[in-house]
Length: 89
Image 1 (cartoon, helix red, strand yellow):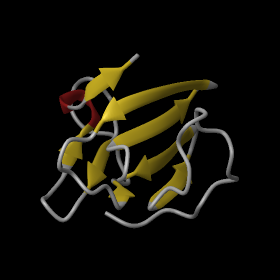
Image 2 (tube, rainbow, N blue to C red; image 1 turned 90 degrees about the vertical axis):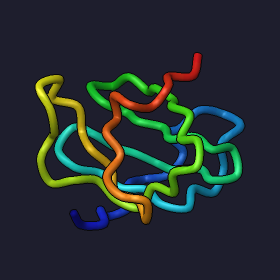
Image 3 (cartoon, rainbow, N blue to C red; image 1 turned 60 degrees about the horizontal axis):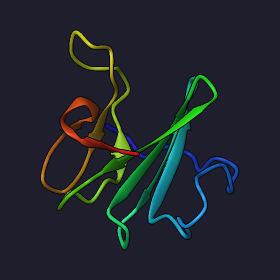
């Protein structure tokens, strides 16, 4: 795992400000918002939000994990598979 370079700001949905961590890798960008407990992911031009619960996201794995090909994120509690987080509409 390694922290990623911050991407350009402002691509995440309105209402989410000042991410605690953000980064980009290949065609994926992420930003973690601990106050709202949200992880915003932009992939293939589409932005999706996830409820992170108690996880404090601080990085993304170098390789995508699992059969789903979804990325895995790192946190102090251990790796967090994107497929394990609940999507927020």
